[in-house]
Image (tube, rainbow, N blue to C red; front, side, top):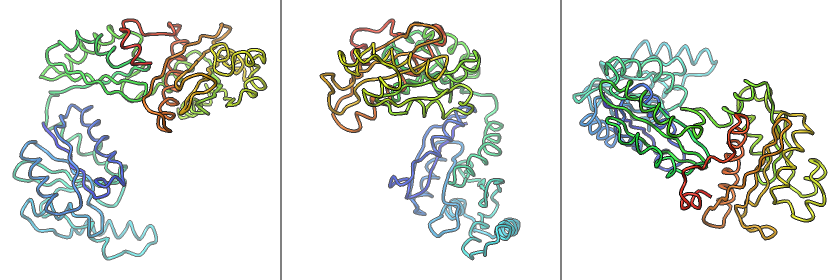
Length: 431
């Protein structure tokens, strides 16, 4: 079963709207063992849509379109599929009654143009849309089947989960492709790839490295009639080779994993932030149920506040300034004790774009103070090319990732640094 995705809309081509639908569909289809071979974006032009559908079904078994099912004149997906199938658009009485009832229930007048959403290509199957007005469509075409879904994300996801994916899985039969994603943080991509050479050599296994700011996801893809068994073996070997570098799987976040670990141990954390200005707290509180594990935070941006609020010794600040490992350690212990948390995590450094007090941009000290323990301090060297506000944003985001990863490792009783196996070049490149 090979599927292509076709997202439709001028707003996607012009960058006014991010194409999140294609990303979500690709991920869900992959999780379901359906192979997505191509993803295309076209504008609101009838001939372009028809050509894109025909081309997709010349290569794949099915094409899934999103967008163009609304009531306005630039919503052309229905028209394109009718023309591709060589049939007329007809008014479906059931859809019309449902549409009129929905509008009446909302106490709104029915605009005549809205009835376009009750028009379907003759012979098309209707895909129930419990989340909105426009149904999805299933249209049989000479090269395969086209599924047309609304562009509204919640409506599209509802129809995909309830109708389209179950149908495709049934048509595909036993999975020929299986995938798993493992997540790491604070380690350079080349280090991970070097460690996984043995996995790369396995038959029927393909690895993809998906880096983002401070993190690398490893997507393992197994193919063949025994794809599920192959995937299980490849994942086990990957975990053996990476060890504690793996912090989670699939959509797990680093903050979510930290929250889970704290819940399991009945512990809490507090944050003292300088250059990140509250980003660590924002990440931790984005997790549902964070009130059970996040005691609070202090944004001690100025040197004075580090002393006044966190109790960092005044003589230490006078001698070394705010950017120093001992300052980070004192901040972590201070916020832990003042907010009566189990752990304190603290960051201080230079985000840029200009150096500060003789420290280059990217100088960073991160500390975690655990229950009754002396604080642990790490100092990742963050080398980000350029000198702009964007560099500043990248360094701040990297700081958050490194801080949460240090916290995770401290909670688990692991070594603070996990760069074993890196070359000197890797260390320099990673920062």
